[in-house]
Length: 99
Image 1 (cartoon, rainbow, N blue to C red):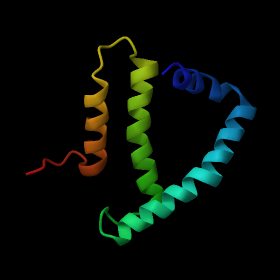
Image 2 (tube, one colour):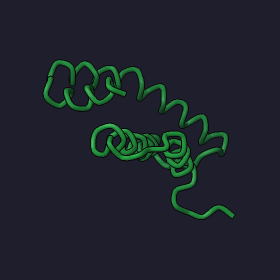
Image 3 (cartoon, rainbow, N blue to C red):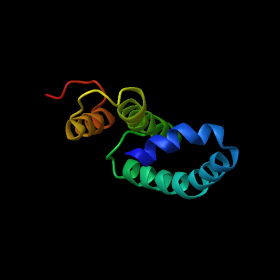
C-alpha cells in the first residue's frame, strides 16, 4: 500500500522515473493487454470497441479506486474486498442493472 502511495506522489515530479514507467507501460503492458482484449472480443466476451478505449475505461475504474483508497481518502473505513468486487462488476457491466 505504501509503495503505491509513494509512486503516485513521486512519479509526476520525477521526469526520469516517469519516462521509464511510461516506456515500460507502452512497450510491455499496452501491447500485451491489447492482444488480450482483441482475443476476448473475437470470442464475444467483451464488446467491440477500440482496444485503447477498453484499456482507458478499465484503467480509469482501477486507478480511480487506487487513488481514492490510498491517496485521497485513506483514512476512510474501507472494505477492500467489497470495493475491488464493485470495481470489477462496474468494469464488466457498467451501471446497468443485472436481471
